[in-house]
Amino acid sequence: MTAQYDDIIVGAGSAGAALAARLTEDPGRRVLLLEAGPDYTAAQRTPEDIRYGRSMSFVDHDWDIRADVRDGRKIRYPRGKTTGGSSAVGATVALRGIPADYDAWAAVGNPAWSWSQVLPYFQKLEDDLDFGESEFHGCGGPIPIRRWRPEELAPGQTAFVEACVQAGFPEVKDHNHPEATGVGPIPSSRPDHEMRATTATTYLAQARGRNNLEVRAHTMVDRVVFRGSKAIGVMAAIAGGSYELIEANRIVLAAGAVASPMILLRSGIGPAEDLRRHGIDIRADAAGVGANLVDHQRTGAFMVAQPGATDPSQPFLQEILRTTSPVSGEFNDLQYYMVNYFGLAPFPELQMLAGADEILGVMVVAQRPGSRGRITLSSADPTALPAIELNFLDTEREIDILMDGVRTAWRLAQHPGIASLGQGFVVLRDAMIDNDDMVRQYVKTSLDSAYHPVGTVRMGPSSDPSAVVDERGAVHGLDALYVCDASIMPATVRANTNLTSIMIGERTADWLRAV
Image (cartoon, rainbow, N blue to C red; front, side):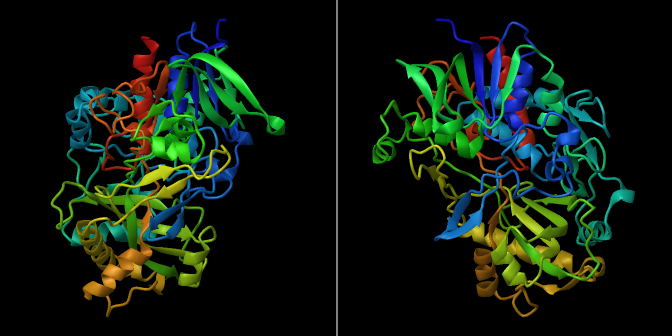
């Protein structure tokens, strides 16, 4: 029998929506895009938490996942649950990694992902409203990218730039230039100073009128279905607790670095011992599924806000300092942000610690963690949440980098224009900042994720026992099954991962259209 679709794409997030839009540019290709969350087809129907990009959305469009940071301490682990995926709920930071990040991917057996190979796809996806068509930028792509204007900055942001310059850091006009380092406006995925540009409002919006694209929302995929070694469809949950087999000539998992390995595991693809424990028949003993979890680590120096010092109508992030840790010497391995405000309602433990509903201050994010975590099944039930172990601070070097980062954040926050916004620091005190033991404990206690998981279905040659897919996303040892999202990254990038995930969708689309 002929399958109803040429391609089923599971997940309408940063990579999946881009992939669906590009594949359906071929009118002869029939594509079904499945999304577990809701699909808002018009701006006026889109809720404010994802329509406006002033802050991240942690509640209404989230999977409610928890992760173990280390030694049993659990944190929220937000992932977008709607068309657009995490591009619809994140901070709209549109940063690329540096060339060395992608060249490192190529060096471990993925030559098609070198910087020279991926740059054209970064240019293809963007409509840079500040620099236009140029050596490193694109014009006319789906994702509008703009930088914050001086007149749009909150007072704390201007003070942050001044503090960085006074500390000796250079100013930067374009953080997406491959050699940029220093402080400057965040490149942001938005057409103006308010609205959020997601892969749903850009790529999908441009493709919705095509007869060869079908989008099904509120559709949870349990597993991939096979005939022999060939993927022939997916088993999807439908109303009433039953399941429907949907068939296609090719299956592409684009559900993200958390959900894609979960679907593979439920499909019998993963570490044999883990699969047996949950009574799942083994289709492929693939040790790398769920392993190699890498995420950026964040902490900082935060204050309880003075009454009237915060304005939720303003974006919570606007300027960024990218710099090299004096501990590591690795180029641009640290990010610092001035956080205009951060609401603590979704984080009751932090709310209790601060004794306030919101905080502000200087955040530091480590971009080159050595720790590797793991995602495993808690149950074979597709509605069960995963077990996630981040395994942060697995090396002393990581702790040393973040200790130095906290001290730098503390010093930057002493600028009068920042300090005057707060009533005093949360936990940190003057007497603590020079005490190694106290700062070390503060790092361990305050450490959180930047919500940038990658690597759980890493790509590499078949000779690499930890590689799950080849450089084109094809699952090793199986036919007609691909993965296209942040899970295939063999290592993280020195940047927020959303733009790289969209680029992965663009890069993969060219290959899959040719097959």
